[in-house]
Every structure is written in structure tokens, then in C-alpha cells.
Length: 354
Image (cartoon, rainbow, N blue to C red; front, side, top):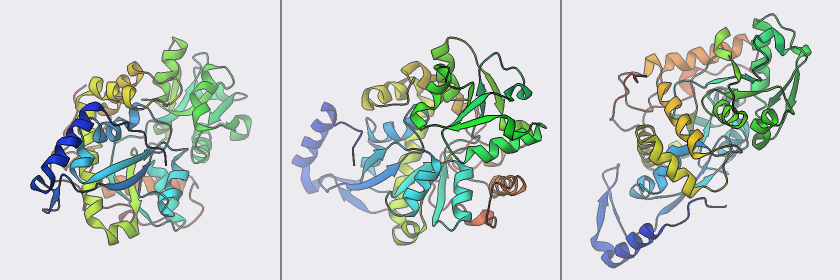
């Protein structure tokens, strides 16, 4: 698997010092055990939900330059994704140990019997909706237009949105495109809009076009979900809970740094990951992190450890998918979808001021 973190000079220097210290240098782990600096780090695989951009900065800075994963004995093997359903399948099948996917994708996968579970949440709102050319000023003007979808799971949700707006879904041309072609399908004129995220895709499209696009959020009709979550296989939770705890701790540290230091995190992202989402730049990545921070927590998550998930939020998401006939099988119990058992006790989620 391709590794997206080149070893920097400073990290090589640290590695040399570590080797000299050998078994004398010990650091505490979250589990209360100790690990030698000279010990071999455990390779741990992680697949993202989509192509890499500002929405993924927490994982990048968690590896380098901050070394949060290394401090937990983990050598992170990061891979970009091709959509939440594919990442869910990769983790369910054991091809990847951890992943990040949309809430709706997790519910759908579990309803189909996939052995995966969320162990932390990254942002409180998914931000999904239709990003359309500025000439389209109302949902009814989507009729006859071409809308690109990079995630197959969003298509039935979009169709449910159209029905809620009294629009016949058959009158809107929905085309599936590769994730890497989602944003450019709009900027090139190949599509009139896309099923995109407000705080990432839309910002990149706006920056490229040099003008603001129109955005129709799915939440307008009650189809807003909580944001992306970190998942792992239920077998990993049972067989290696220590690894899950260490991975979650490092991940939360990485995201805390990225949210609190968007300029530094975006700079690290630009320097460490050469292949990013088309149209992504340091400027759009900074804007993405700032926008994500504003929707980081739901009301239910406030006062709990960062990454904590609410059964009320999960229950609401399951209910929405069931009512809109997105789930083709029996709806899973909300309690079966997640666990907060591996989250660090601090810091505590607080309301973010705009």
C-alpha cells in the first residue's frame, strides 16, 4: 500500500536519537503500559472516505509532524478513498483496519449485516446538499438539469429531497462520476451541479469559478445527518481493544490540533500529501477546517468528550433513512452502530463561537 507520509529530516533525526537511546527510553501508552522508543511501530491501515483535502487534515497532522500516532505505537498507513460505501466494505472485509465514512453509509452497511461500528465522530453535521450553478436559484429549477454524484448512497437521499420539494426525481438527470471528477464536473460545465458538501466541495468550486454557487442543503427537508465517523471492524474491537483505544486517542489529538490550528494544519497537508482532491489548495483547506469547526458538535454532544456520539442523533438518522426508504433491509438498532468506550476523557466538547 502506498504510504502518503514522507519521512522528514526532523523525524529521521528523532529516529536516530531513539535508536541510540534504545531500551532506556520509555513512553507511557494510553493503556497504562510502556513502549520502548526503539520498539518497532505497529503498521495500522486507514482508508478515508474520499479524495484527500482539508476534511482529512486531522489524520495527516496526527502522523506528521506531531507524531500522535507514533506516540501510541502506531505507524499510520493512510489511503484516500473512493466513497463511503467502498470504505465501509474495505473495513468490513478486513482489508483496512480503520476508516472514515458518512453516518448514513454506516447505518446502511450495518443494516446489510456488515460487521463494523463507529468509535468516534469527526464533525456534527454532514453538510450534504446540492451545489448548483448560481443561475439556479430554487430547487424547482433543477428540473432538466444534470447533477453529478460521486457517492451512490447520496442518490436515493437526493431523490427523497426532490420528492419533499414536490419535484419528480425522474425529471432531474443524475449521473455518477468518479470521486476525483465530482468538483470538476461542475467547474468544467459538464454538470449543472453536484451532490456535494458545503464546507469542502462547494468552497473549492467557488474558488475555482471565482463566484459563489447556490446550495440546497438536504437538511432543509429533515435529511440532515451527523457528520463522518471513524469506524473499525467489530472483530478488531473484540480482539484488540487496546489498539482501538490508542488509535482513537491519536486521531482525536490530530483533529483537535487541526481545528485549533487551521493554517498550520493546511500547510502540513500541502507539504505532506502531493495528490489531493482536484481544486484543493492551502487556501481552500484552511477555509474548510474553519467551516468544519463551526459544525463540529451537535447539541447532544456538548458537555461530553470530543468524539462522543449521541444515541439520540443515531436514532434520528436511522429514522430518517427508514422513512425515506433509503434502507432496503431492516433498520438496525441505534445502539448497535457505535461505541464511546474508547474515547479519551478530555477535552470536553463546547459550543463553538462564530
